[in-house]
Length: 219
Image (cartoon, rainbow, N blue to C red; front, side):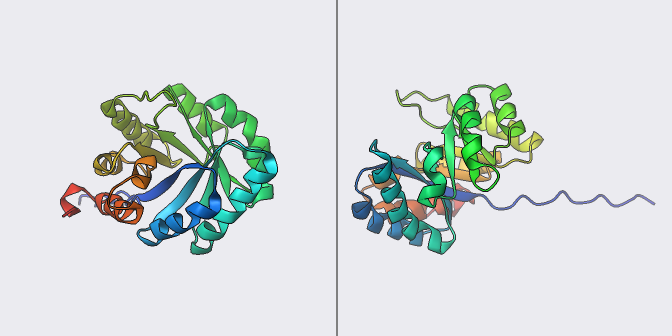
């Protein structure tokens, strides 16, 4: 008698990871952020802060933490690992293996440490070995450059097949969300483009959420 094959464990449905614009006035952004979070299921918010003194940065984080965390969403800082604990954030996202490694003393073991800006597979594996809670592929560099979308999808497929550590795929627009999710991303980052969407950020994030299950779900 042939032994029945065991079904492979089903991967949890991918979730959204929301990236903010560069924030200067937290009070002015709080309302838009709250409406966006109410429009769809979001796992985490990556807070990007305009340069300021440390006290000002901490105050901005605390203001927006009051919007993000009560609904069970994780608040991560883009860099600034040294203020995560004092500001009450849940963790930080670091760009590049060197910055990630240097930030671990501020984050582990109590806080989330994510890593992006990983130019090679070797760097991605190093981040995982050094304790990354997730890795990110596909983000846009400050000069506007980005790997080809085909390369990003291939990197996510490779990671999802070999490594259990969660992977975030960065979508440059809502049109990329379904493909990143299908490639195996555990989270899909949607960001700066949503805040300028003519439909408003709440409608834009609801659209992104609908695309997580595939383009056929979008009206």
